[in-house]
Amino acid sequence: MIHAYLNYPNPHLCVHGDPQCGQVGMHNKPNQRHVRLGLPTLSSGLETLIGLQFGSRSEINDVWIEADLDDVEFERACVALGVRRLAQRYGPFDGLAIETHCEGPSG
Ligand SMILES: [Zn+2]
Image: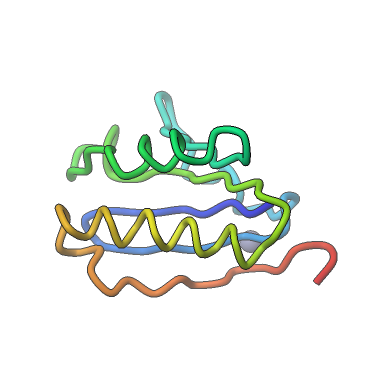
């Protein structure tokens, strides 16, 4: 499972493989947005992610994405896919690189 933090309009995408990482849950605020990508509901989760509105207001300037798909490469690929689709509407996301902050417990 990975936790990915996506920020706008100063684009930033950071992946945490360690669920115990101290940064996971940081930036949380009232009405913090979370999107979960899980196997039984992967397509609807991606739809939710791709459909998000972004703007400079604090309610809509970021999202935590929790991907739990049994394979970290697949999880990162799904996050990257969602961000590429968002980039079609939000130019700052175009070409955004995934930063890795920490790896999962199994390496
Ligand atoms: Zn981390």
